[in-house]
Image (cartoon, rainbow, N blue to C red):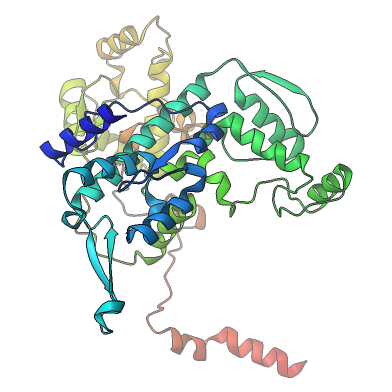
Length: 440
């Protein structure tokens, strides 16, 4: 322990930018050992006093009463034992006043009633870096543990609802509970320390406690009926005891999944900025219909297809009066035919795409298209290639919607809603409703 502390002190004295980087921390305990981690010892960083991790509040009380030291935001410290060990080393090298803010109590009272308290918080850059490094290290350990559990094919466990035994991957048990018992804890891939998680749930059920409302019942039959009738087949999301079993709670310093989710919702609701000046449009990178050539703009792609392959897309669009969705179907049709090694002009089939493309070029079928009714079909609404950027860049040059043809070429004129209050008071519908109510 002393040697480890000396290494911590030597590293910290060299640079505060890499406080913990060179250290080799112990591996994260397996899920079965999570409970045992509460037995880790917390040393006081100013004297020989120590306490178990499960008695952390006792140590904090000792620091405040005996040493007048207060640690800010203790709940945000990812690994409190390592945090205490680090500062124990630092305080042995330099006085505490070099690190802590001094707070004088009863500053306006008599001198004999005044006391100096020392606040250790992340306003100190070294403390902030320490907390962030501990958070990062814990996240890495949790992700490694989660990956081991996801890859584990030797998982064995009995369903807590029907006693059916499952083996292989843990997802089989979670999927079974969700499908057969309507009990879901979210995606299995989001769970970490799975065995300890299941043990916690089973202990609650064994103590006849509802997993959602956490009320206790007189027997198991009553408990099952309650959970079924009340649809309480889920865990209580407000119970922080479950936080350690979900990876999202380790992602950001001091934030739970509810904090992260509420921030996302707040950003969506509050983002009313109509200034799109910072929008950076990515290049199209559309792929040619007949080769692997890519272009960042559609003009370049059209020129390439015309100059290299003799395919004049603009000419076909004009001659056939193609609306936007007809262009989509047209492109998807050509893509699919070539993918199936078939000439879209004569329907001859070949053994490879290279052969059909050579045939199209040699035979002059590049502009030899079948009747519109062949490719203007609903199945060609669906892209042949999901990431076909060419489809995203198509445009309706006439500025008309395809639906115009199906409405008798009657233009639709948008209502002027510039003055909503005037519309409310002069609306014909309002008068009709008024007449109807008076007649009734």
